[in-house]
Image 1 (cartoon, rainbow, N blue to C red):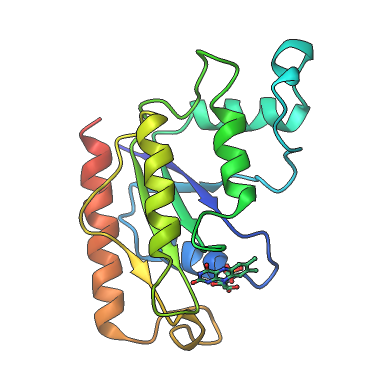
Image 2: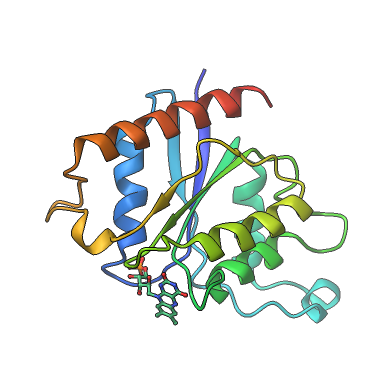
Length: 182
Ligand code: FNR
């Protein structure tokens, strides 16, 4: 049966490599997975006062969208060895009001993407630290670190190396199996 996977992309950039990678992953994923990219760029910076005084519309929309999902796939760059603020903000927004964590229990997977050689390791693992606290069972193996991304995608945004495609396909298949366990 069909599963709906939300995609959270840690870059707002128009020509984002992370956006391209996220799209590529949807094209190689098992067909029973459907994907929905979550908009996080329009969320005002989280302020706990909103929890008492009323939340922005974009917060309410995001929380509702997440609650309807079967799983979440995070595809993120690394900013200064951590997750971009825009992604952390989205995690915080949907974790509140207290006791209403929308992420809770959703199976997740993490892909980090970088133009460099450390392949977003710092962001990948800082993100995992938050996902643990948010109570999201997160796929541990295979890990997915994609480095040297500027030289890995062709003009259509496809990976041109067969071995990488094989690895990514196996990653998405394993994620699909992981989702079925919950
Ligand atoms: C970066 N970049 C970067 N790369 C990395 O591997 N480790 C890092 O710590 C950082 N730090 C960092 C900070 C800031 C503010 C920016 C703007 C960039 C480079 C980053 O990998 C590159 O810009 C990617 O292209 C970002 O992903 P998108 O936007 O292409 O998806």
